[in-house]
Length: 183
Image 1: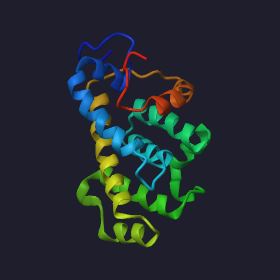
Image 2: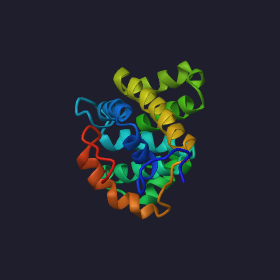
Image 3: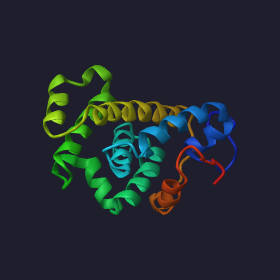
């Protein structure tokens, strides 16, 4: 049970967005630009994977599974692949550039000043653009905020991870701007 009176049956951030739609508008707007904008050289799946990874590092069950389900949809992979990236992305068959960006995301999760110049240099040397680095840092920061929002207010989460996988396609198609927390 959440620490505040959110609408019944709306887990995680969905209940909080229904509780305070005027703040949800801005959070969803930022998520739409960062995670779905087509003017980006990172795929939607890669950006959702960054959000998933940061949410995993923050131990936010709702966000890591909700965005993990969306990442699975975009990347056409299974839950085990996402779990293996969360456990050890360096050993996974993903691009070195994405590994470098996940390293930056991990540092941001610890604190902005934890990002080292050599991490940025490595990402650039592996082909990351300044926009990709910018967006990685901002996705990480946004999800640190969202994870703390969800868990700081004690929201509920469906414990069945398959629930999030099954909803991934709908969430991906719906986007964030037209998000209806009641669906």
